[in-house]
Length: 111
Image (cartoon, rainbow, N blue to C red):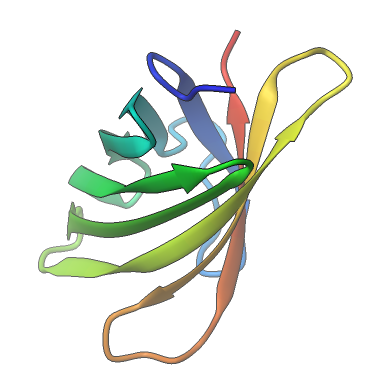
C-alpha cells in the first residue's frame, strides 16, 4: 500500500460541516514511508501536511490558511481502509493546536 499520487476528498468531519459541492481535497505523495502533500477546499484556502506511514497508520502534522481568515494547525493519525470498490479511505482522528478536543473525519479516495 502506498499513498503516492492518490487524491482524497473529505466526506465527513466532527469539526465542521463538509460542503458537498466543494469538499476539502487532499493530494498525497509518499516515498520510503514519508508522506507529504497539500489540500484546499471548503473552509481551507491553502494547506500542507507532512508525516509518516507505518503499515495502515499515517501520522501527520498539518497547517492551513482559512477562508474566514487566520490559520489553523495540528496533528492527526489516520487508519487506511480499503473499500469494496478497491479505493482507499482514511479514517482520521485529529486535534488542533492548543485544543485537546479530538475530532474524526473520513476521506475517500477519488477514482
